[in-house]
Structures are given as structure tokens and as C-alpha cells.
Length: 551
Image 1 (cartoon, helix red, strand yellow):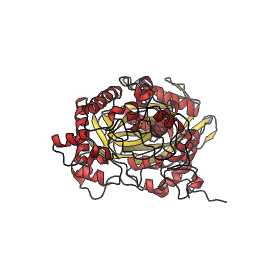
Image 2 (cartoon, rainbow, N blue to C red):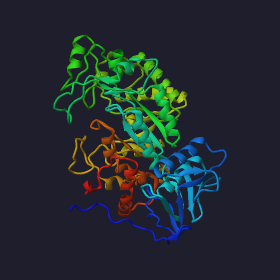
Image 3 (tube, rainbow, N blue to C red):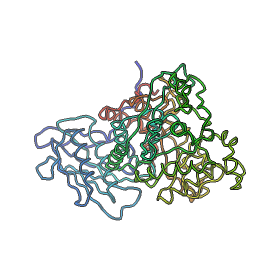
């Protein structure tokens, strides 16, 4: 028989009380993820049967009240009231002077539960901890252990990314993805909306971006370079109204949504819609292998720019020499900036080949006029110019670590993905950085040495994710303050369906949540807690990678 991965769950000893109806109630073991700063078990059990009284401050936002009521009802079958007839009480209190990043305190006695925080977000996180003291199933009577928990986050930026360009996911799954972020106390959702294989957000000024750029004529079959093409038109996009719906949903769960509009590379979908954005509009899009029949026919008919159907990095990028390119991007980004309330806007900046720029007369003229010594400095000019525009819109740009090449834009935040060096370099320059290295944070990589489905490759185990330390040892104390936190990245070349996304992301995102929230590191204890967490996956209907396959 195959050995189960995790040891038997650790249980804090708590006395069992007989309730007024003489029915003993046994509390669950305390298995909270991410691990709080302090957990002090007390004597007693809070009994909850059928109903619970909720008390919120008068000036609290309505969506916190709605969320609390919805989760307690759907997940645990509890009705909520404001009276004293309920079997138990849950009180929320705002308190000034609490220190730390979104601090909260959760106090449970045999009489009531109380969550105290300095701001609403802290109350929300305290409620997530409160929920983890319930069993991961509906019962007639719940017994919660008496406990005093004091907690705050290690990093402000605790992110999870989702690429919706390679494969598109509808609103129901985006909302579920956000719910899972909330359960794990993540604070940011990085929404990768544009790339070579599809433009996924409506831009009213440029309808062809979605009419043409949101759909490809086929998709490569199997692992790149593939065994053929499925010759099936594929795509989709989010309207302004749908984006607003997602933003409202995320806000109700205290998740900040950061949009990404890729530039100057990864631009094939935009160029398919508006060929003049290319250095060479009259050159056909190159799909090296397994081009769909639809694209062949399209190019034969004269529409020579097509949305990419395979994976990789492509030479056809936004032309840096044309003023019309910047006019287009500024119009697009102005629309995106107005739609998204986040102060951050991710502009990509990664994997931009310079092949066309080297041959393009307009790009070479731009370099000569601005005294740029090479195409790396031309990319820096490109990014800096876009940053200046977005700064005027009240936005701070985030870019992948290639934006360091040729000189970093004045106010840019570096997202370090090619190892930790980009983050180190940014911090030493007193620029903020977010750590997302392929070595620990790429959740599309294999999670076992022998993966049972097609993936992009690589291997990042649950233990490796858990043991990641976002702040490099080589930074001084002053430099370390520029590391904002970290993020897990989820690229979807080989994730056709929501179930595959969940399969690849969990349980590794659960480990990452503890890395980014907690200062305590204990992998053995984490594995013990995962026994309970797998039950929660069941409660949340998450298609997590099976525990038995992780060893």
C-alpha cells in the first residue's frame, strides 16, 4: 500500500465541554495556514449550532458583512443574526494603534469569538483564520477551540498570477481563483491579459484588438513544438463590464487586481489586429511549425499578420521608432488605467527580441536622435516613456526584470523572475522589487520528477516552494526593505481547463502563502497541517494535486 505523504495531524490538547444539551463537542486540531505569529491555546470550547450572531462596527463596509454571512451559510449551513438568540457570537472590532502589516487578533472563549484589527482588511484576515478552526465539512454542531491568536503579515505584496492569454478562463473560474487567494491571505491578483496568443481585454478605442486579436485559428497539439495543430478557432475576452464585475468581486475579498498589458514584446495578437504597429507590416507572421489551415488561408487571402498559435518568443514586436506606436499604447493604457483602481500597472517588458529593431530604419533613427548606444537602451527608452505617461495617470509601473537592461525607468518596480539577481539589483538601486524566481515560484513547472500530464517542464516540489526565502542574504538591512514580497506565476500553455490550473497550483500556492505571510518556517509542521488542508480543498471543490502523488 502506498504510504500517505503527511504525518498524523498535530493536535493541541483542549478540554472537552459538555453542552447544555449534554452532547459532547470535540474541537478540531488547530491547523492554520499560513501560520500565525502567535497561537495560544486556552481551556474551553465554543459551541456553534445552527446559528451565530454577527456584530460588526457601524462604519464597516457592507461587503465584509455580506461575505461573512455568505461563507458561514454556504460552507457551514449557519444562519446569521444580530440578536442574542443565536447559539454563539462573533464580534468584529476596529482598534487603533495595532502594529504590523494588516494585524489582527482572534480571541475565542467558550462564550464568544472576537476579531480585533486596525483596519477592515485585518478583520477579513482574522475571519479567514476563524474559518480554519471549523472542521472541513458541514455538521449539526461545531466545536471551536478556545484560543488567542495574534497575527500580522511578513510582506505587503503576496501575489498570485494567472495567464489568460495562452488559455482563456471565464468569470466563474476567475472568481473562484480570487476566492482561493482570499482563503490563503494573498493580497494581489496579477491578471496577465495580453500576449502573443490572445488579447483578452476590451479596448473601446481599438475594437480590432478583440475582434481579431482575441482569437487564434488553431493551437499547437502537445508539448512545443507539437505534433500538429487542432485547427480550431480559440479565444475570448473580457468586456469592460465583466472586468468591473471581477474588480468588485476582488475588492469584496480585499484582493487588489493588477492588470498586465505586455510591451514592447509578446505583441503578436495586437499586431495581428493592427499590423502597422510592427516594424515590418508587410512581412507575414511566422509560425515556424504546425501552422493552422485557417492561418494559411488567411495569409493567402492577404491578411498576413495572424495571432500566434504556438508557444515561445517571437521577433515581431511593437515598433519603437514610430510615434504611432506610442500613441496606440498610450490610448490603450489610458483606458486600462481608468478601468483598474490599483495604483500598479504591469507593462511586461520581458523577452523582447531586438532582431526587427536592428533592421528597422525608424528604430535606428530613434536611437541616433536620442543618443542610444544599442537596442537595450532603446528598450529602456521605450519603457521609460511609457512609465512617464502612466505616472501622469497616477500609476506605478511593474515590469519583469528585463526592464533593468539598458537602464531602469526612474520609478519602476522590478518583478524578478530570472532568479533573484534582478531583485537584488533593484534593491541596491533603491527600487522596489517583487520576487518571482523560476527556481521557486513558477507553478506551471512539474511538481513531481515524473509528472503525469503535459507541462512546460522543470521541477519545483512542494518542499522547495515552502523553503523559499524572498529576501536575499546578500542585501543589507536597508536594502532588504525594498523587497515588497513575492508572487507565484501560473503560465497556461498546457492548462486548457480550470481543473488543470487548480491541479498545478495547489498545494504549492498553499505553501507559498505561508512563505509570504509567516516568519516561522517548519516544513514538518506544515505537512502535518496539510492533512487538514486537503480536507479544505474538498470543501472548496478544488482539484488539487493528490497528496499521494507528491512523494
